Length: 211
Ligand code: MN
Image (cartoon, rainbow, N blue to C red; front, side, top):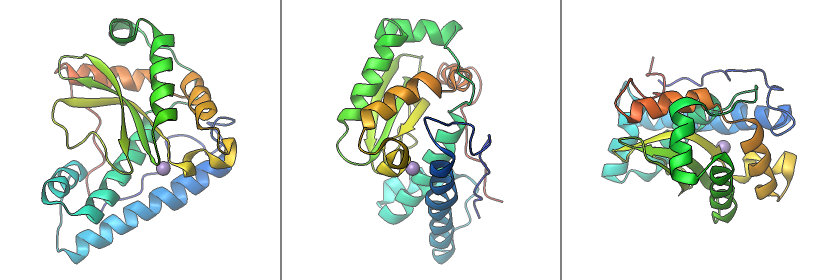
């Protein structure tokens, strides 16, 4: 059984970009439902995996769509909570240098990230990810699709661009949500750890194993 982990901060900690009401609905209803459905599907199939990453990779390979969608959404949301911080941060050190190399500067990354998320058609996620070796790229994925099944790609930060992530606070203004999100909430020290992992120094973030 995989467990819905509590948020790593208070429900009102990300306001006003993400309100207390949105975090309750998003974490306690949406994320909780993905975890519940994931556990039901695993139980029905008689599977007792330890690692959510393995569930996602296997389901992507075998084409078990419902299992993939719920497992990947459980993973994506846990990663999303971990990749945000209530305290405004700025990228430093090797992360700052890698952003400069790929995007010119932080403003260049912001432009690419916001454009990718605002232009993404339908539901999904916008990621800053590092290839093995550390080269950075912005990419978006549809629905539950995530970066876990792709060897050689380590996510640094992600923003949820499903409507449930921003509609209560920003209505249809996804671009405004992304701009406000990028300026206030990325956990750049978390991202720096992920970049180290992409370069082979240390382990990337993993979803807590099944208990
Ligand atoms: Mn979501």
